[in-house]
Image (cartoon, rainbow, N blue to C red; front, side, top):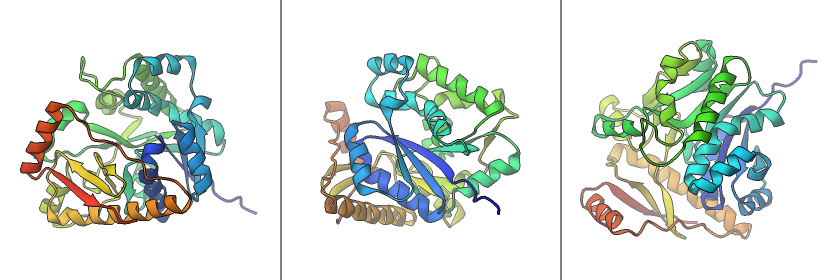
Length: 318
């Protein structure tokens, strides 16, 4: 009798503040990849406890302290929470490989992704390329081309095969992020992401760049693609900048213009967040709120974005 195929392994990392976003990621992933197994590295004990209570299908948890090495702990003491999260990202793959001996590849997902089609659209292209690592281009619209200063490629959907040449790329990235991973531009570096810029040249026979950036959408390209192609066929949408600012209200985006053709994706996502919040409340879990920044520079920027239509808010009905 033929043994059943191994699940497709994915990983992400978040704390309790991003639980509803993580729940929508997990749900949408399973809808379009029923055999998906999503490993969540829990950045605090609370989110681990919450995920145990919710018992989401296909979700597995790893405590961050179980993968923290002495080098990671040194970095943790020197970096902000966001910077440390970025520092951890290259290490998540090994955490899953170590726990899943049958995993032939692992794909990292940003927590704020929402799947609208099969992740195998990307994974099948990696298989066809014969390469060992998959990355995605931001695909910035001309209006936001300046965003490439923070990285041409986006650490949002990133796949490593277990062995072979992929190990060399992974180890180099891990060391780079241990040495330097901050939320500032310095000597051609930014966070964990800018390191990817030279991968296609440095590791040309190993790294494949997904060839359809119009199918990996975010606020930086969705309106441009909608106007250019007259249709949207995303595999996923990256809800960069979305956050709960109160128990029933979210800021949908900040610093971008989103046209009417793309607005329905936000409407669909907000509805999913409402369902996630309802599920959480039924389990006795409160809605996490992320207060907006309060500095003078931020407030002035927020006023300008509001006046120019570059920020949007929506109510979430649980």
